[in-house]
Image 1 (cartoon, rainbow, N blue to C red):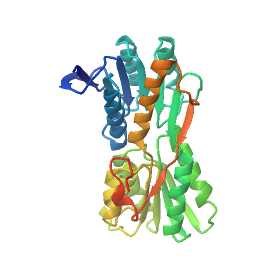
Image 2 (image 1 turned 30 degrees about the horizontal axis):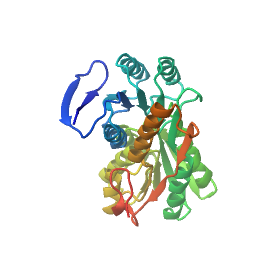
Image 3 (image 1 turned 45 degrees about the vertical axis):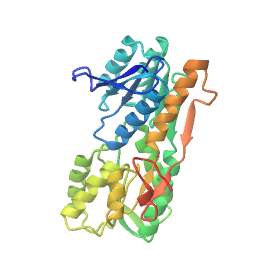
Length: 315
């Protein structure tokens, strides 16, 4: 039985800690680098945990890195992965355009990249781009939003980071459904950059300017939680809020009668699939699959929220 080392690094300026533990029959297959946005967002933490656990099960060492949605930090972390001789990189990237050069650099160094959650603008550089079907998921969320809103009323949309392809895809999916209903009127649309704090602040100011709003549809659950907190603080728990991701926090809010719905994208399993494809590629030189792969999302509401745990649905 060999010892598998887990390495965690938050940027090059961060403190590196090493933890040794008996992790099963590790076969010394090499190092897999796992690079995601901040683990302060439980979605990204679930990705990192899912990828790391599967990599260890398959006999790899892991290095877990956090780019904080900073393309420059991400570039430095790619350099770290290359310098450490990683055999593969699992990545939730820091920008569809800004990431292309880093993935190309890894490819040129003989290190394949397997992307999850967010696509990049180029094909033929990463081996796999495994993403949730954000458009399909957004349509599910929008259909539920329309139903709960009873097809009428003023509403607000909080969108994600402009540099993130998913922000635009989700917004388009929302509007392709909602815009079919002329009595649903969007009175404000603002970016809260995927942030709970920003969503709280934006919701406060939007509510002051638009006290008659009936609903809020959000590009992710973190923003939904921020919006809901602002609405509760203002005594407006009557406002309908719908999110996107399938987080435990929103699950708990749904079960408590707060936020009405979210859309689950299977972050944990998606990351595990990326590692499995990396393992296949390392062994055979091919995944046997197309580079771009979509995973369908699932609507979460009061009917099935109790079956949701850490971005996975049971039952």
